[in-house]
Length: 61
Image 1 (cartoon, helix red, strand yellow):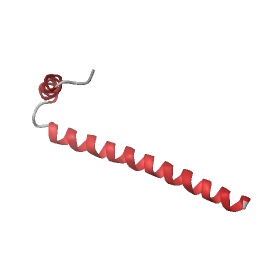
Image 2 (cartoon, one colour):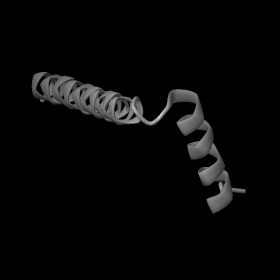
Image 3 (tube, helix red, strand yellow):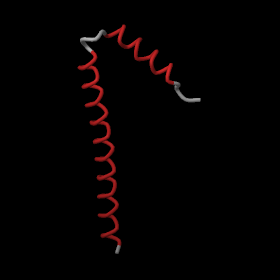
Image 4 (tube, helix red, strand yellow):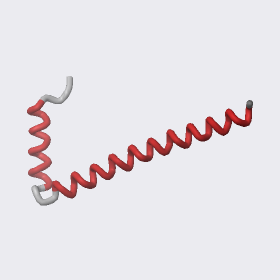
């Protein structure tokens, strides 16, 4: 069971009422930067993990 169109509209209306139209652009910008930072952190962890695995393989061969 996913979210239907009406559920999304209801959530957006509640957010609009709670925060107001003047704060929505800033809220969206901060949410976007938080998601970008989270993805960059995950990519950094994957890169570090791959680097450690590659260094470990070189020492064993």
